[in-house]
Length: 454
Ligand code: PLP
Image (cartoon, rainbow, N blue to C red; front, side, top):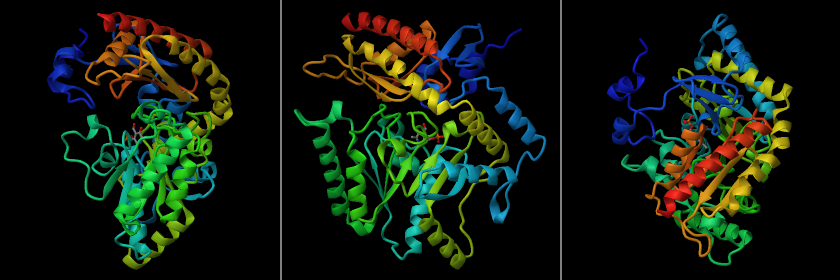
């Protein structure tokens, strides 16, 4: 007979970002099949995937061309590494393609398997680079409150979400944090977006001066914060931030793990916000999540320094067994071909007004304080009261209830920061898919209002 996946799961499986004690009671949500923008559980119940899994399955859940590309590579050269000068041909092809696609100042690329590894790699590159240019004391990395850059010990230190760092004795040494650019929640009374951006840039400037510019190596930022709440920064934020970084010779690492590959209507978030990164990290939609792969791009000048340094030391001792994995590379190349052939970027821009206005239509709902987003990335902020602005106690669990109701109605959503609901539908979603997402969300929102009023 059919196996009891729920019982087996509870007996042996330790889940990520899950209340493990509660999980023993609730059991897992087990998906068995995917088709287009939908996934199905063992009973055949369909869920429309409004989160593309973890903001990553851009081409949905049944793109045969990606399976074919993986099969073809697996039956040609299933594995090779990139240590000691070796590599697979397909990985070089991908490197060339990504460098051509990347924002201008970035000319060299490394690979890894996850966003966390990519951000760890970025930190090590920065440290190695500053050793190479005779600045061994310039090593601190500044991140931001509510940032999400991964969970490995370094990336998990950059991450500033309590649910992620709590209990793990993080951050490690040399990591600092400054404020999050969420105007709706964090601006002072009467402060304009412009003034708020200025205050945050001033705060960064003061932080660098306080630490000592000779000790600060880099600043890392997601163009739009994802897990921290889909936080779209004020229009002038990055311009002001970049001015401060230039003044103090501090590098800018742009984490495009979510925003890369068309998610917000430009190929990269850097284009949308006028960011000229020194280092950029990519992941997720690079392979449409069909195979694990991430990348780290850097400026030519950074490469030149680390190349010279590795000449002196004898080697550049960083990289993973699966860096540049040929199966992932083949899947990434095919993903990029599909994005181009089907003009996914054009499609995202054509359906964005529908998507954003469908969600915007809930801004009159008593529970909704703010609807924010760009492209196919959005969040709905739940509030206890709109005026005066009052946020739910983050332990209230209302957003969690909403997402659970959404599951019952057949849409997969995600809770952010305990009081917002995230949306990142597959890039291939149709207007009808988006209408269904918005409609099912609306039902869950109304269910939640009933509970909130009790
Ligand atoms: N950076 C950002 C912006 C992310 O959203 C994530 C994951 O959600 C990561 C890095 C870490 O990626 P991974 O989970 O592949 O390690």
